[in-house]
Length: 405
Image 1 (cartoon, helix red, strand yellow):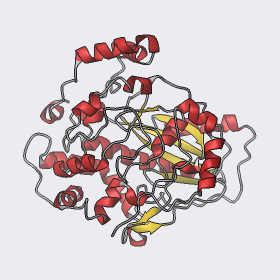
Image 2 (tube, rainbow, N blue to C red):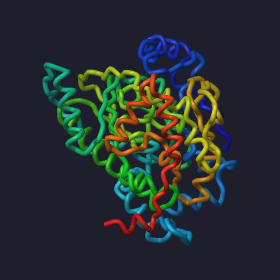
Image 3 (spheres, helix red, strand yellow):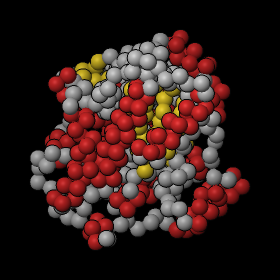
Image 4 (spheres, one colour):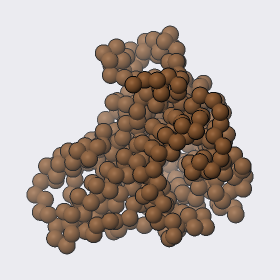
C-alpha cells in the first residue's frame, strides 16, 4: 500500500489561511511560523502506523519490537534487557493497553488511533456556570486531584488535528471527527520517573513511559467523566485526534526543543501529555515566552548523543524531514525513520535525548539557579558553558536501579 504524504487535508487552503490569520498574534508569541501552504498531518503517516502498512518500514525488527510488548520473543541478555526488565516495562503499560485494546473489533485503538470512547453519557441538564474563570480554576484543581502534574487550557485549533485517523483493522484512513461545538482543550502533563529515565536506553527505562500512559488514561477518563456529568461534552484523548505538542505549548506548559519534545520549566522534557476536548466554558491560558527554546538554539547535546543521528544540528526549518514529520511550519524536525529503526533494533523505546537534555534536572537550588541562567538572555551563554563543563550525566545502570530501595 502506498499512501500519499499528508493528504488529503480535512481543512481547505482557505480555512488554513483563515486560521493562520485568527491565531497570528498567539502564534507570534509562541514562536509558531505556520505557512499558508500548511496542511494537516495525516495520522496514516505517523511512524508507528507506517510500521504496519508501509513495506519500506516494516521488517523483522519492527515486528519484534511490537511483539516484545507481549513477550512473544526471547528477551536480550544484558543489563536492562532481561526478562525482568521487559516484564516491568510491559506491566507499566498494562492499564493503557486495556483501554486501547477494547475497541479492536471496530478498528479503534483508543488513546492512540482514536479518542477514548465515552463510558458515561453527557448529563441532560447542564450545570449553570456563572463564572468561567472560577470553573477553569476548579477544572485545574480536579485534574491535579486525579493525578495530573501540569494543567493548561487553550482554544481549539483545527490546524493541529489529524486530517484522518486510522482504522486499525486494516490500517486504512478513517474520518477524524469530534462532536460539534468544541471550544477548548484541556492539556495535562504527566511527569515521568527520573530514576527510570536516567537508565535509558533499555527496556527497564520504558517503564517510565508505560507508567504515564497508564496514569494519563485513567486521569483523562476521570476528568472527562466529571465534565460530562456537568452536562458538557468532553472527549478524552492521548496520542489520537490531534498533535499534542502544539496544544501543550499553546496551553502554556512549555516550549518546543531541538529534541522534538515540549520542555517544561518543572520537568524539562520528562513529561507525557494528554488532552480533553470540551465545550465547557473555560478561560484559556496566556502563554508567554520562557527562554527555553532560545537555549536550544545554542545547544546540540541531544543531537550529539543520538545513536542513529536522527536529530538536527542546524536551525529550525519549514522542510519536512520525511513523510512522518509535518512540513510548512518552522521547527526542528527529526528523521523519524532513523529514530524508529533504532527503537526496533533495541526492541524498546530510546529516549537518550530526554535523558541528556540539560533541562532534565532535579529541583535542588543549584539546578534551579542554572535554569534561571539558561532562560535569561544575558546569562544564557554562561549557562551553556557551565553545562558543557559538567558534560553528560552518567547513565544510571539498570542493575543499580534495581538495587535502590
